[in-house]
Length: 226
Image (cartoon, rainbow, N blue to C red):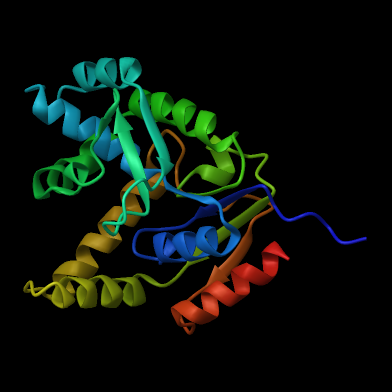
């Protein structure tokens, strides 16, 4: 008897490993919600900036995170978005992509109790089912009961090349060595933080994408769903 299609799919992995690309394609193919959990930290960062809260004031940012309701829903507009990000009833899907949020979100996402508050909200959304959740601690912390766990990996050098090419494709200048340094530093922060460090869940399927293109990675993941 065939096994049922996984209801909750968790995709974890380091920065620039291609998690979001894979997650969105997989969710589209299954008719599921694509949920990149990083948007929650962006939402808290945006709200803190809008309210004039010092991003480096951990207590103040944590207090904000603990009382802010964030939701992620299927896309309501055909403007390129993969989903709607709603904060206190307001659509902030594109606002959370600002350069100012980019510059501050890594600080916010490192706070212990902000992560705890966001994990609770991520779990609430994930438990609705029919979801592909992407992050760094989904299979290990947020939804350890996920039906399918994928850990998408690639070398720091490969990920830096991808990020470098993405930046240049947007018409912006980029130095590969600088990008590589940032990727390695992000790996260090993600894997050594006290709360929910980046690691492979014991029952996760590891996909090393160093010698695979996006289509090959997708086909490998799609077969796992079957």
